[in-house]
Image (cartoon, rainbow, N blue to C red; front, side, top):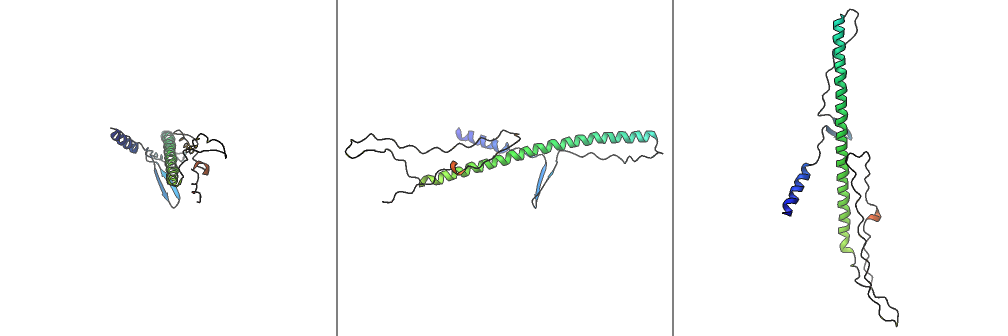
Length: 179
């Protein structure tokens, strides 16, 4: 049952990745974005004023121009909305993937260092010459790894992504004492 549930969750996560609405192309370090949802309106015929143009024709040209100006405004709004949506999607995707890489690397450093650590002492006896033996004192356990900072909320206006500092990583293994 647990395996089936895990497979369902994993499958859902694969399809939950938001898709871009526009097309992003990177060529030679240059990034271009092109809308796939917005269509530019066709320009109206040239409305060059001519004193001999009948009033009805001029009124029709002005109406065409006004319709074009309205359609151009709707097109610009569409571009803005699509670009903002794509920008947020890309930003969240980059931050999420970077956070996963940071977490995986931090775990890898911890896992690779684990076999190199000396096991904690079960008890330490402290006594002075001629004194009665003291009660064993348990050794202090190793400090737990620091928590990973939480992901920023979706659609946040600023994103702060930080790699762990040297103090966040496990300490270097202590070599065994020479005999």
